[in-house]
Every structure is written in structure tokens, then in C-alpha cells.
Length: 464
Image (cartoon, rainbow, N blue to C red; front, top):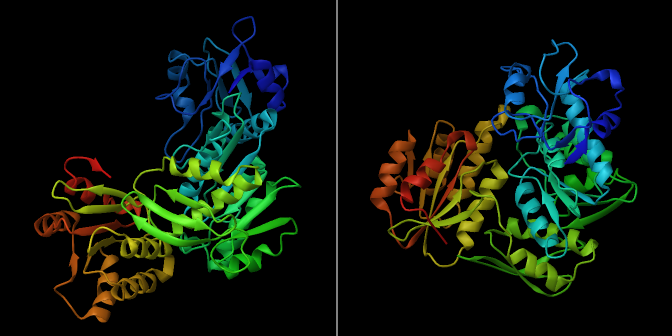
């Protein structure tokens, strides 16, 4: 974002009295920052207030770092600094308002993606596919909340052709806010899973929260949703706009057959155009994510060959079924970024279907944010993996013991269903049994940091 101080105050609906300017002349601002550690010269510094910090304490530091202007909440003391100070009622609301105004100023198509699983990969694949023809801005990492989304929109360059943004949530009402900020032209709901069950009574509540994405959808906008999820279809029927289904079930606008998984990724044939596609990701669930990208690309007018070219070049976020190799030749399917029950099962299925290594092993850790049903959900995962052609089932963590116990009920084989109390214990044993004929899936919630296991096994950072 590059704008003048006058234009910025117009976007915020402020009069001249709200700006305490210490120098004459027009001020040009180049970008927005809420963190003095990453602030660049010419940025507008917006001090946010958190539970443990107050960004106003760093205003002078921001000015010293070269801030072109700073905001100040009206209930805080306006600092005497050598740059314009914009006084607002609430700095967080001002950040969100500014993002909404800048998105409106650019007037470009915006694609918004949400879902319990797959939203980051779908975002990455969609952006890669669209990039064959347009300059595309996408959410970096998972800046997908009430602060990250506005910052992502405000980081768009003036010559951006379209944007693909991710929307995350923990509670009802959060997606609605994000949708009204981004006002998307296209909305995508990848699925409804069990993530964040501690904040909802059931999956229906999660489905309704995800469907809040239509709150800011343009009048002529399109909603693409998972056609394999009856609950999402049922709740989505309340939306009277243009709804299109994507998935493997009959009646879906986009589907796939002939799915094969190799070390380099997954191949499939799209049912709508009969073309062969390749994505640098593992798993049938990632084929679904690719189908959402294809649905968006087709809606935007891309040809099948253009989309195939974009998908095969996609750069995906790390630790999401990322295939790596240990010095001894064992494959590590690194899915340690985060977890919920549906994602864990999808990872296991991807491992089983992966070609190239005959021995399949898993290391599963705790799944967090499941609320009162956490034990039953862990046990369900255990029963699921226990019934799959997985040779070794390793688990680590207090909650993962439930996975271990349920898997053991199915297998009755303590020699191949093994629980570790600590990550260090898991690392030692996995190094001992490491086998070049094996592929090991590593999966747990981010808070359990099982990426430590991956790094310990891949002492030389080798990727396939």
C-alpha cells in the first residue's frame, strides 16, 4: 500500500482535527506495520493493544525506526513525536477499516478460503493456478485472523490483479467480520471438521460459522463448497446465491478419478475436462483442495492446460504432508504443522496410498482443542489407524495414549503399537529402528512440536 496522509484519513472518515502533524507538506505512507521489529521506513505504525502488551509503548521506537506516521488510540496519551499522529477511537477497528477501504480502492477480485482443513493448501494452489495469467497476492503463512487478514490486504501492491486470502476462526462471528472486511467475489469452504470443538457444541455450529463467509460476499459472487459433506450442503442450502459443489460425489461440478501418489506428488484426472493434473502434495484430500483451485480458475476463465501448468508449479506451505528423506533413506511424511481428527485420518490414508516404500509407519501425537470429546476422538483415530495396513503405530503424549490404547484393542500387538512418554524417547527409538524401506508419517497439533522429531531424523535437510 502506498498512499498519502490525506487519502488515508479520508478512508478512515476522519477530519483534519484527528491528525496532529508536526511538519508541513504532504506525507506519503508506504505500508502498514503493527510491529516495530519489522517496521520499514515510511510505514504507518498502528499500535494494537493486547492482553500482555500495548503497542503504544513502542510509538517512539517506531518513529526512530522511520515510521512515516503513527496512530494513537484516543484514550491513550498522544505522544510528542516528530511525525504525524493520527488519533482514532480504536486502533484495531481502524486497522480493519483501513484494510476494507484499501481493498475497495483496488477494486480487484478477491477469493476467500475457509474450512476446518485444507484452507492454507487450497489458498496456495489457487494462487499458483491463477498466477499463470495474473499478478496474484496471497495470504502469507496463515495470517488469517482479525489482525492478520487486514495486514495481508494492506500489503497488496497497487498493481495486484487479484487476491487469495485465508480466513480462520475459533468462535462464531469471526468469519463474518473477516468476510465484511475482504468483501470477496468468490468464497470457498473446503470442509467442516472437528477442529475447535472446545468452542462449539457440535459440527453444525462449526458449519454455520464457516458459512458466515457469505456475509460479505458480493451480490454476484459465487460460493464453492465441499459436495461430499451432507451437513455443509444442508446448511449451505440456506444461502440463496450462486452455490457450486466440488468433491468426489455425484452431482459435483468438479471431481477427480485415477488418483495416484508418488514421491513427487499426486496425479489425478479431472472429471469435467478429462485432463491430467499433478500437484506437489500428497493425499486424496489435497486432490480435493486442487479441485477447489480448478473450480475457481475455470470460473475466472482459465483453460485446463493453463491450470495444469499452474498447479504443478505450486509452492506449498511447509510441514503439510511434506515429503523428506533421512540420511539413511527413510521417507518422512512431515505433517507436523497442526492436526485435527479428520486431518490425521487423511494423512494416514495418504501414507497408505503412497508408492515407493513398502513399510508404512506413523508417529501420532496429541490433538488439541477438542473439548469434552477429546478422549473419544483420540480413540476413534486409534481404531482407524489400527485397521489400516500400517506396520508400526508409534504415539507420544498424554492424549495420544488414547490413540495407542484404541489401536492396541484392534491390533493386539504390543511389539508394533508402541507409546512414548516424551518426544526425546520417540526420537531415540525411531533413530534405532530407522529403515530405508519405510515411510513415516509424523502428525500432531502444532503445540506438541513434533517437528523436533522430523529435524532430529533429517539431520541433513534433504527434501524430495
